[in-house]
Image (cartoon, rainbow, N blue to C red; front, side, top):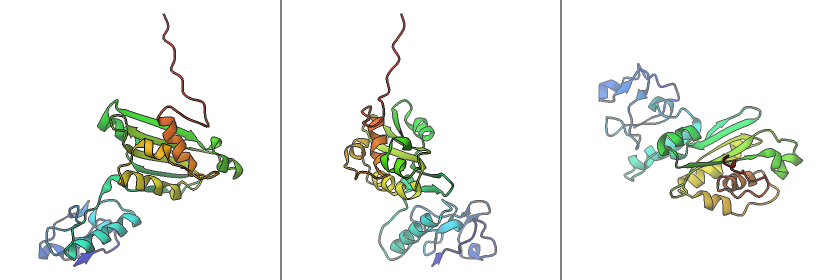
Amino acid sequence: MLVSVGRGPTVENLGLERIGVEFDKRKGIAADEHRRTTARHIYAVGDCAGYWQLAHTAFREGEVAAENAAGHHAIVDNRAVPRPIYTDPEIAGVGLTEAEAREQYGDDIATGMFPWVANARAVMQNETVGWVKSIHETRYGELLGLVMVGPHVTDLIEAGVVAIDAEATVETVADGMAAHPTLSEAIKEAGLVALGRPIHIPARTRAKATA
């Protein structure tokens, strides 16, 4: 049985408690990473499961629940959930924010920010407000997050989803070949900035110590 009622996390009056399904009035139905509830034959996905309340996470949760119900093993991995905001300019993020990364990794974090004003396609489209920020840990170089503000970033964020899901390094992203002129070049460029070797914006210089 799959519960995906498409409502908020409040699940009173569904009668689930009578068959052994636990739920919290604020968080929704208790479900694990397989989206299995406390009743082993019942799964819960979407808003009622109390995790991310986004359509695309509900789609993935439904796939995972179906695979597990059919006898396979699948889990919902929350590392690379895209977070689109359809404002003007658009905003999108995936993985950790810089604050979250620094909380987990301390000083072993590097970031790179690339502005749209330095991207040829954005200039041609007269959409130069915003930037792309790349976030990675410096011990192994693993890409931890991307945060974007600007044109079509709710579409571009999928590149970050794939990279983080694949545990790609920032070097992989920065050294990949990006078609020109495209908006997606900004993702590569942000990685280059994070590595200290930007191409289309000036390199950051460290202030000289005074005597």
